[in-house]
Amino acid sequence: MIPDDGRPVTGQEWDAPTPLGARGTLPTFPADCLPDWVAAFVKAVAEETQTPVDAAGCVALAALSTAAGGRAIVQVRGTYTEPVNLFTVVALPSASRKSAVFRAITSPILKVEAELTERIKPQIVEAELAREVAAGVAEKAKAKAVSSKGAPDALADASDAAAAIEEITIPVVPQLVADDVTPERAASILCDQGGRLAVLSAEGGIFQILAGRYSGAPNFDLFLKGHAGDMLRVDRRDRTEHVETAVLTLGLAVQPDVIREIATGPGFRGKGLLGRFLYALPESNIGTRNVDPDPVPADVAATYEERLMRMVVHLFDWTDPIRLQLSPEADELRLDYARKLEPRLHPRTGDLGHMSDWAGKSVGAIVRIAALLHLADNPVDGYRLPISGDTMAAAIRIGEYFTRHAEAAFDHMGADPETERARLVLDWLRRKQPARFTVREAFSGLPRGTFPKVADVLPSLELLEGYGWIAMEPPPPRNPKGGRPPSPAYQVHPQISGPGA
Image (cartoon, rainbow, N blue to C red; front, side, top):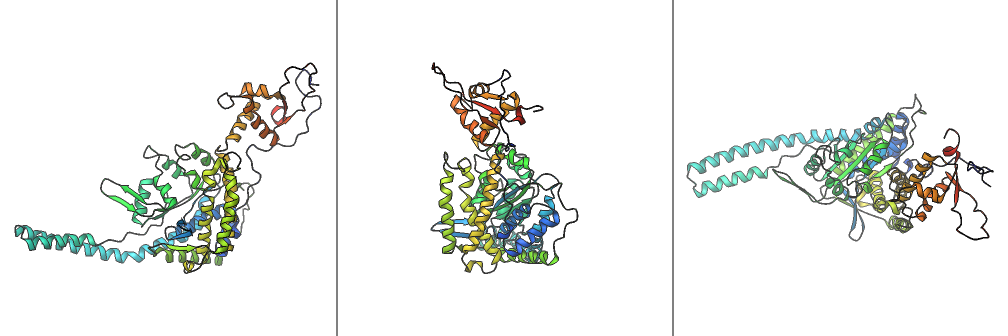
């Protein structure tokens, strides 16, 4: 029996509802899966900066990618290869000390960059001087050819002297890292650096730049090709820039709202860029931080700096990329993971079907992570050793962490259509604040473009019931005289319908 105000005589027992789209507590970055020297530093930086370990862990992977990107590939099977670069993005609110984490993790790379620059300066000076001398010789040869009125021998000497200038190549100042850079400038730097570059930033400005902040039009070409390791050719007014293999690393820290904003940016999803990032959405610890944390132990910092710098320097001089192989144990683990993943990608029945553009690349991402872990442990002779089963198992654990966080990120971006439809129903309930409602009442109040038929509302109601926002009432007894059965009815959580809602 329902009283005149529409409220049931016996109230529903309610637990606290689960926020719509929440997938429970997200896992913490598994720092123990990293090589010991990296793991120790990541944990120490997280303690000193009082930041979630996820931040240091993701930036550390980007640092390893900076060291190895463009200098190694994994020969997975047959013609299937994977480069070893990653795109990582960690979302933390303002005042989370993202810059401090970036400084600590990436400073050895910048130090190596400075040392490489000092090492190459004498070669630059020598090449510039040689070119000036050759230019002087060419000028004299040209003058002689002119004064001889084009005598064959003089013309040949002038031509040879001009060609000699072009044969002298002035080395480029090494640049491993860029920050706030346009896609056009990044492409030029990458080509100058032999096809490799890392964009590491504690801000999310690169997304606005990609969306066309300066150019007025989105430009994803470098970032799509740079993730896959594809050929890049850019025609400028004065020259053509070309590399056979473009390898880009991205390591970013952004505020959580940026994750939602990029989903609405023109082309970010459709062009496939969002599916290339490894997302981390750790819970902020602002308000619970230790104001007197332990600093990073000196020996831990020294070991990290020495090992990362050695890795960068050793791999920097490789021109042809190292080809890494998977051990039989590692390959079987990869295949087992891929077999279990495949049904989850189904567009209708798979739990990852709504984000298959990301999940479909997760096996490749795991292979890349395994290669980075392998090279971090074996920077000098890693090409002689296959990637072990233990290393692949560690990479899979990291991959599973990123899968859980990607689900949360894509939900945050509104990538799950059913969750978005359920949000529309929840918004309607919050506006109307009914104590109970029928399916037909909900259908009447919802947009026809999203819910063209009454039956289209039912999956959203089922989802809301599962999250504890509504509860279906038992169906009333059938009318012995027949007639149309009443529309199913639901009670509404007091958080929406109760006093003060």
